[in-house]
Length: 241
Image 1 (spheres, rainbow, N blue to C red):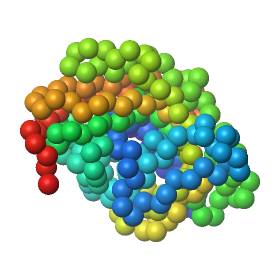
Image 2: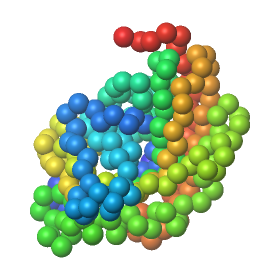
Image 3: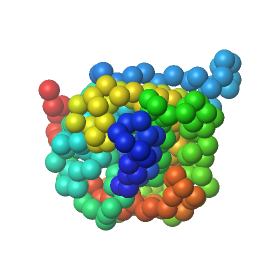
Image 4: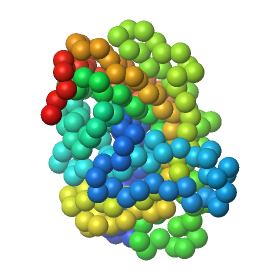
């Protein structure tokens, strides 16, 4: 995972983060801001945007840096903030790395192979705090992504299982001790995501290996990065309470 810190002192600069992330939840965690389609007033226009990326970042960015799944290199924090029968797992662009995780039975796994988000923060100029501006910042990811590959227990998923999605517009309220070092309560908004995602139906109880690989070559702020993350998963028998 590669992170570009805000420009200027503290949160008054824009938060620019490019992450390749792996394995996620479709249900926003408690306390996260809701994702809303604010690009237009007609349902037909808004329907082309998805909520997967928005909910992923509302999960990942609301975890404190000390236990952040986004920066974890072993899998020790892969269950942080997870809720319900669908889980996010985070990726990493500084790899290759291997994470070892225990997952409850009946859990759907959802993950981006490569993705990027961009959000405005308090103090940004008005012209850089618009939906049009933040969407432009991540627009290069779609064309720049290549060599996307996901294997489950040694079998590669069909390319059709890796879907591209532009997110709805969303916001994130950063917690105390967040990964940016910004004051607690800083609101990142408007924020958007662009990414290639996979959904895996619940795996059978037992041991499984999921490997996620991909690369992006794009102009800044997306930039160029690669992903190679392996998850060694143990799916429990029965449900964890």
